[in-house]
Length: 212
Image: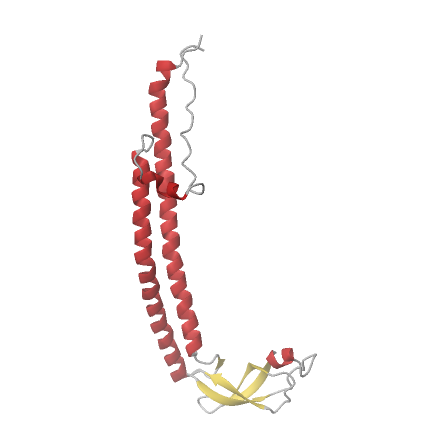
């Protein structure tokens, strides 16, 4: 139909940086096809890269230091409030199907034990023991101020492991935030480019599009 404006075609795709290394910087090179949004996206990408390079190590150090102080304080508190006490097995521990094997040496079974609480009274609880221990055997358990069997205080290795875990999480969090910001910025600029392309096409198409 005469006078009908054909649909706008999408703008050309961005160059593929994988073909030539210098195309990685195509947004910085002057050329008649470069749009202002292309240069803006290049500056945003550079700013985000510098921000991540500065923020990621800083966040890793800050979070790691905070986590280390937290777990070190927790370990000191646990060491002050927990006692290593002897306990006696109330009944025999289960036997491993393969006595003497490497698996049997690593396997532990929960068994009811009897021990003396902080106030001097007799208490019972469960703790993991080696397989095959007979009733009446003595094992050592950690007991808290409430008289309950608990885990031993955090070791230096556990403190170091948990500290590194939180530091890595902080580092990855900053990197992923930077990538997300870059992706959202690119999406918004692409939508702006498409809107500008449609507006320009609506003005240009009637000048040269003629149908009989």
